[in-house]
Amino acid sequence: MLKLSSALINKPVLSLRTGSPIAQVVAPVINPDNLKIEGFYCTDRFKGTTSILLYQDIRELLPKGFIVNDHDVLSDQSELIRLKEILDLNYQLIGKQVITVSKDKVGRIGDYAVEIETMYIQKLYVMQSLLKSFTGGSLSIDRSQIHEVTDTKVIINDLLKRSPITAPVAAA
Image (tube, rainbow, N blue to C red; front, side, top):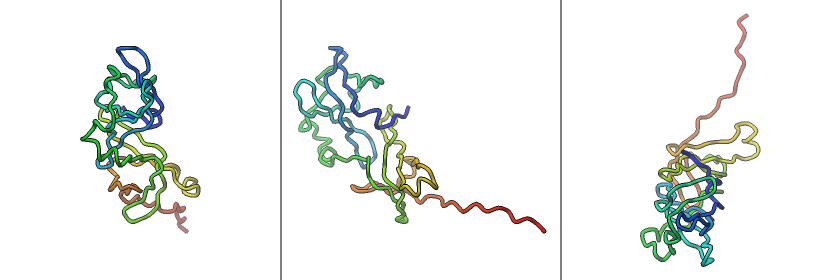
């Protein structure tokens, strides 16, 4: 099932053991190499520090929040050696510029959809400039259309060009 990124942020992390909130999700930890959400930055309710909730420690994702076993699943950034490079990047997709392989500007990422089972980002929703949004509407880009992801932009395969609609010539 796909969920928008906005449905994953600012949600409480709920403990099954205590039945109460233990943290608040602040932002995703995105791996730019494969566009996978490796975990979430959380504000720990008890310590007041930023901790990491790994995606594999989430038991269930409900509209009320993330369900986990206990407070022990929250990790300090220094404990996650395997994710050190990704955490140091602090990569965020929202607001990144989207261009085509042939260098045409498409717009900026306004939101994205995540497959909840695998935590892979499947779709990017691009906000186009005001003029383009009048003529072409909003743009949804599938994962298969992404050519490259860099620190500053997302490069996609060239889009199909629309030809102007003309009325057929009447035979005389």
